[in-house]
Length: 190
Image (cartoon, rainbow, N blue to C red; front, top):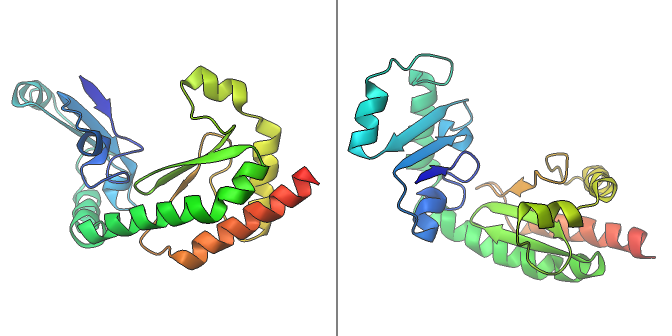
């Protein structure tokens, strides 16, 4: 099994989605967050597969730059500690609690796993990518993004990129998101 942890590695748990959900992959692909802010690509796998990878030269922008690897090690050792993941879980629960009324008014729900947060249309959990496409209103997602940005809450633009909690976030940032969502709900629903 190949597990792509490009977006989930070290954000949903220290060991990524594989560790959080008990997935034992033969090959794991990672990037982004594992560079500690520097661009990086990471692969890991069984001894047999890694021997095959080692047989081919690994050169390029994302292949083992000492700066990128040092940033990634510092991130995993000093920033994303076990305590940080406990805080992410607490903030996720706080986010779901404080944003519940606004999300319900908007016919939306939040999915929070570790530091990853998705705000999705509809109250029922998503079942597939097709289900997500059917329920997602791109114009409304852009309007929500603009409203949040104008109220000091910056998300990645678009309906498929959401937000990632960081060690710098706390209850005040969750309250700011909840207030901005409530303001948007008032404008959309009224």
